[in-house]
Amino acid sequence: MTDNSQHYNELLDTHRHLHEMQYEHWIRYELFTYQWWTLLAMLIIPWLIWWRLVDRTRTGIILTYGLYIIFVVIAMDALGEAFQLWFYPIKLIPIIPHIIPIDWSILPVLHMLIYQCFPRWKTFLITEIIAAAVLAFVCEPFTEWFGIYLALHWYHLWSFPIYFLKAVIGKWLIERIVYCR
Image (cartoon, rainbow, N blue to C red; front, side, top):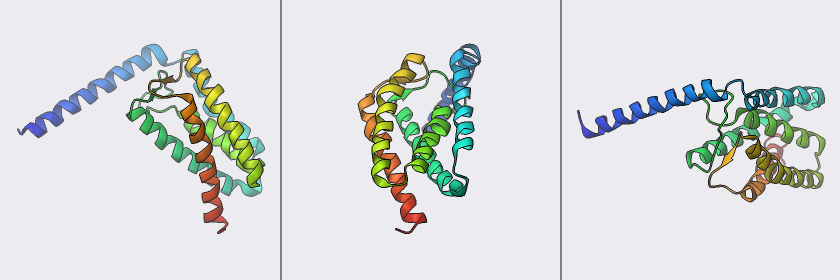
């Protein structure tokens, strides 16, 4: 056996052990806590609200924008966790490291509703600046206080331009691709 394969086997064993520990922790300390139930509600309720409010004549384009938001948020969340910039102490599902309700529900639904309700650039930009400020300076600190998010090497101020830019780039891309502008 080469040093490389021996080292690889050690990595696999460590990885397996880590997953076993994470699953055990999830069963004992996360599953069915008030934070877990809140995460479940945060996953379902925004989509119910979206379903009631979505403009049915524009559902396809709005969902396309939402899928872009989901893709970007998941990618950024994966990078943030990989570089240990933040951590999620409570998970809805133990095998998925990022915070599903925020990445797959809260953020895309919020941005889709803004995209739908503010089609003109000026009002869209103003609304997204407000949303970015609320997300970075109110929601992130609240999720830390609530125990579902822990900033390790990250400042909320850094989140503000990211929240704003991902939404603006998404609108720009959708208009370029779909409307050929």
